[in-house]
Length: 310
Image 1 (tube, one colour):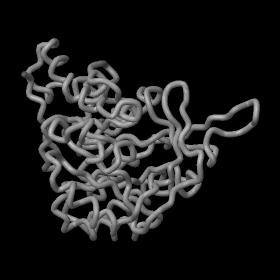
Image 2 (cartoon, one colour):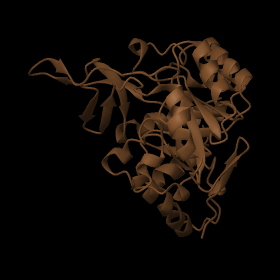
Image 3 (tube, helix red, strand yellow):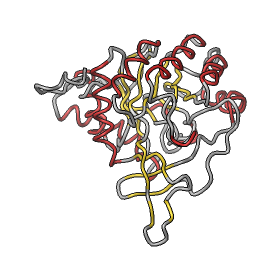
Image 4 (cartoon, helix red, strand yellow):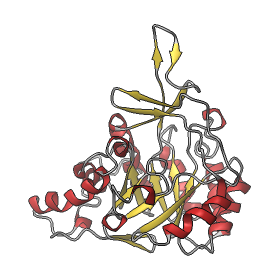
């Protein structure tokens, strides 16, 4: 069997497959479909300081090659998360990553400080990039100075490893990536959803109540893969790829462009067990290619222009 374990940011994963925030509950809700001991890690849905009801319905819309969503970070807040969720997550036999979100820099710092002493949490993922709040303005992920300020504030509030989740809805993602690295991020997650829109031309009604929302699924993979490559080329910290992953070969493509791990999201809506299938099929593909260690795939992209993202 091929070696599937990877290490980055001081963390060790049995394989490079994690769930993506917002697609898998907080993680253990899906344990009957996806036993955590078969995964590299579980990433929670976004947790905020106060409870959020989320956006009005309809807030999910299926498209030809993925989903549009505008959930609006619905969650019960940090108090409920610490009280009701973390005692169960402490039993998860894999990496546990808590995704945190806020409407002000101080919110992110307060959440990080609150979770710093929670042993069930192995790392924090900073949601800089949700397109479904604040009117899709993305204030924390489109300006490198603001992104750096958020990461710096969180870095000062916790000793835990930090993953900064970036948006593809920017002109130069490499600039944002470098700002997050300079501020103390231990890794980057590339990327969150693309801004998209659906409409019924007969009625003139949009697919989402908020009109625009986050587009995810198979259709975004080429864009997300490009973003991940640009980030991996621009920084020295690890990158976690995310976007359009539905099979094991998708994972290996993200590793080839320089990622150290990959998150699986939208494909789990139609089949919650797919994330395990993806992880288990990695060995078969590597064996067929004569590769004994998955780490040999990381950064394997070849070509005369592969360094141009820097």
